[in-house]
Amino acid sequence: MGNYAVFLEGANFRLSEGGNSLSGFFITKRVEAPDIDEAKRIAIQELWLRPELVGQEGSAPTPTIEVRVVEELLVSMKMKDTGLHVFPMDED
Image 1 (tube, one colour):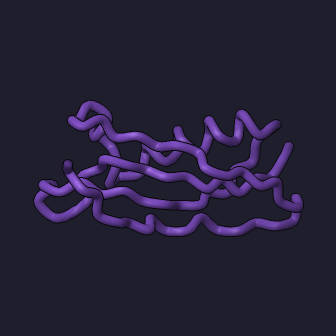
Image 2 (cartoon, rainbow, N blue to C red; image 1 turned 180 degrees about the horizontal axis):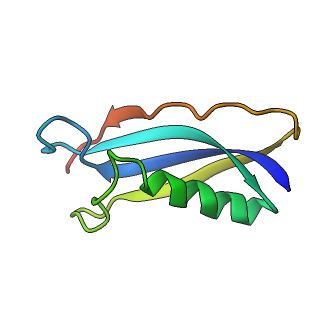
Image 3 (spheres, rainbow, N blue to C red; image 1 turned 135 degrees about the horizontal axis):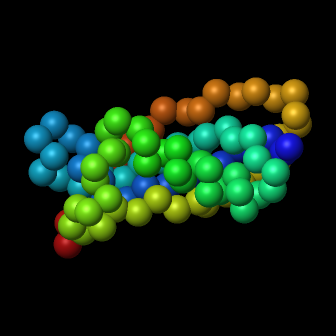
């Protein structure tokens, strides 16, 4: 079983109070998986379960989560996930 740090970017989420403006975010998640492709899948799946993201799948514009970088870690490295680093997006 591999140990991976997965850096993800989210876009078009409604994360502010009132949910009127669109935000993006960055987060790094640690995932244990048999390979890199499975680590990517698990990281995205787990991220969609966060309370602030649940239920936004059908919003317009469509929110997305993309893997930007995956790094294999030493098995002994048990880093914690970072928090969501949120940024505003233009609604052009």
